[in-house]
Length: 133
Image (cartoon, rainbow, N blue to C red; front, side, top):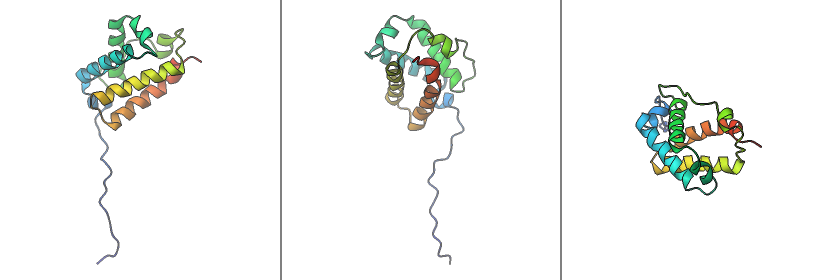
């Protein structure tokens, strides 16, 4: 009889589903982006930027960007982030407000910690292309 004790591995098995699939595909991402934009419209830090934007286009481009960026089947056809946000002089405070709204929408819609972390990672990787110091 061995004197070595072992404990079961309780590490969650890695998922093979793409972020696109974990966000619910087209329908899930469309609901997520709509909720994010609605939160932006109510967020005093960024509301004026979204109130005066073309709402239909902002939502459509956000949905396309999220779908493609999360591993969906269709490409993003919009402008590159520096081009899309160039000249807007987006501050660090505004960027963080947008990211906070994204994380709040994910929570509100019942997504888990891994999905929140994955979306945050993508958002954080784009910060230098969006914030102009």
